[in-house]
Length: 272
Image (cartoon, rainbow, N blue to C red; front, side):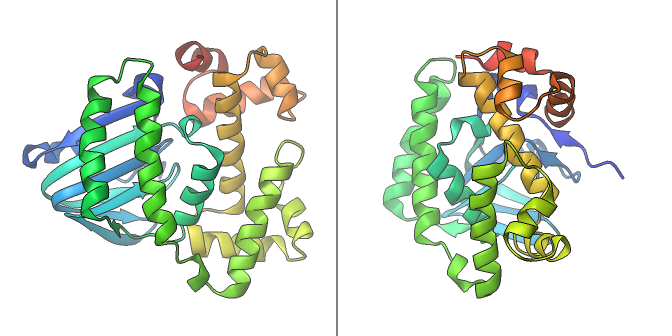
């Protein structure tokens, strides 16, 4: 079975999309198993949304926030009179600290309650973003919304509840990938650095965050590619070399396969 991937480029110019949820919006939710290549942030103020993520069902109720990370296999199981907001964001719009919080949040795998003050703040920010989606201010509103989500996530971070050994390996692995990904993209390199087998490293990642070691590494390098193509003034061949790809053809083929568009087309849509 080939699991389809929904791409941010299909429905969100500039890598940012937004949708207000209402009781008549149930048809928007795709009941088919799929992945997204972008982050999904959801604030539910009323109603219910149940979703299967990596073979586990989670239910979002009024007064909760939830988030989906790129690459997570999921499908919506139940939608009942939802009210609130959903925002779709390419990873290039998340700062480094927010990305780290999101990666830790993947370990939680459940919706989080949000207090009235932050709910009120989001209920002001989402409409403002919707009205200014095509303006330069869209990124500022998007980052403000993400900051509120990650603030709530940080306060509910239960990574310390993990098996101590798994926690140690996960955090160290993420640090190693961040430092070495441009020169090393083989799982065996990281397993050796961690003094464990490749199979054990893969077992820990799959059990805790729902991704294999290879998937995690690929998602990280694709995100680096997107960022460079968006923000760097270097040409694409220079970006390819800087990210550790001496063969530009391979760089282009890998990016196109993962995102559905070529590096040059992506740059033409997103370059600031």
